[in-house]
Length: 103
Image (cartoon, rainbow, N blue to C red; front, side, top):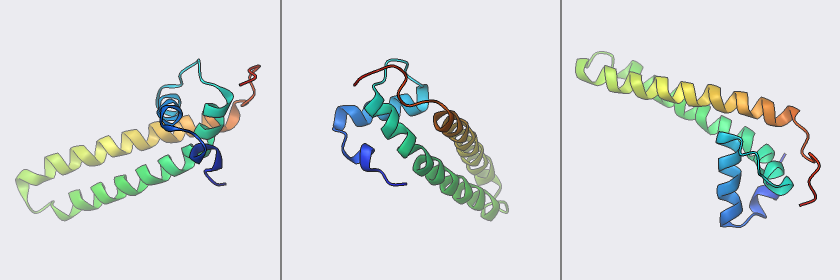
């Protein structure tokens, strides 16, 4: 799966794709929904990598007392965002793209 629909979008539509992916904006066009469906696995994969890096950083800083809490907070925040993106990806994958719209 590529990012053809996402790459064909202009700047305004790309912002709409992000808005639809993270907030499920109900007024999104078919083109935006299709691009969000393509964008979802890449966004989720990037968040998985960020979460693993933050967890590795927290693990590496465990001997340095004052740095463990901020690194742990970043790792937890990244994990939460990753889970949220994975749930949204599953919903996007299961919902029909052409929900009665002609745009």
